[in-house]
Image (cartoon, rainbow, N blue to C red; front, side, top):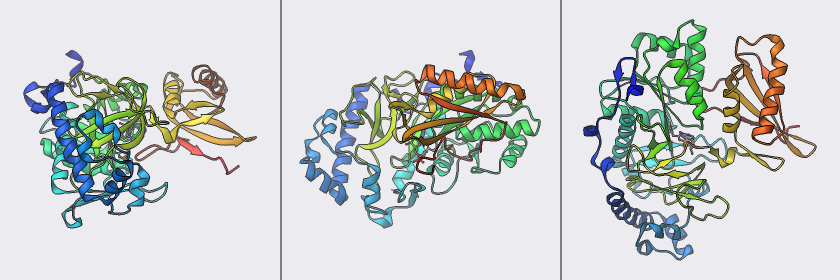
Length: 442
Ligand code: DLL
């Protein structure tokens, strides 16, 4: 596989390094899932008052699960359930056996809190190490960890996973972009753990300092924690001459490490189905959809002790695909969260659709935000997008017109476009905020 040969390193996967379960048949996997699912439902029912009440109200009991298909009888869990039980009400083990707590930022209401037992942390490190290995990382490699350390699960999740694999970690966290680039030049890491939008900010800094990013030591970027398109992947890979690998997770389920792309296929994240059982549902009706159909991802943890989650509604839109590099199923690149979906005059619009269009235009940089306003009681969107540095002053108006035309033609909505000077769109240090909702403010 010549494509896997990068900067002199052969990153092709070695069969002997895989865990037995990664080589298991679908039947073996299903048997393990059923056994673990039964255990999880019993554990949640017996030890979390909220689950007992919810199952009782729905008239279901863990014993009703005879096949994997029976899971659909059980009620969903939502962010609201977690909020109502703030802070520790969803824990299924005594508080003094919980040895780590993480929480969401809580910008949209009360934070959601998650807890881990010692075994949970062990499992988390193991699935992260598996993810990193699938992405081409190897023991002995050096990683710069630019995910935020703290209540966010990205920093510590990657940290312990990389150490488990036998990598060395530089725990930089997000921010101090100048320093990120300086240390990268000095330490020569093989891998960076980073959100794709922050990697673009790091790319800007390379250029500002006059350093050729293609000559950086990086071979792999583990990009996740936010939606990003394959067009963005191509932009990043070309700019740095590395493999940009998608990986997905959410704190309520474990953090990063729920699923990860395999280097040899780069065709969507393989879900570590021995620990996280996936379903896709119709977000409007809750009906389980067959594999291959688009809908909302739902996960049930199969091995978590401190805080099992049963049918957790992620709000992330994707679909399940058959396994390729592994027998475990894949999820298609997340289109976006249902919360980020804008409905503009009856048409559904996701920031990722706009991103894809922007990246096809050589005059525009991959830095944009979408402003939402109410104009005469109708939703109105303005895409604010940076020009690349070589665009002449006279070229801006043409960009505005062309992009608005393409958005109309490809997505079907009328949008205003404002092309702005390089550097005018605020850079993210972690997860990018693509939509600025100004409705109600004008
Ligand atoms: O973002 C965990 C994580 C950290 C994943 C680092 C990957 C790398 P939360 O802060 O709880 O956890 O946010 C979870 O982020 O429901 C998705 O909406 C979004 N998300 C995470 N990974 C991806 C991805 C972490 N690869 C929420 N593609 C999820 C698209 C993603 N969206």
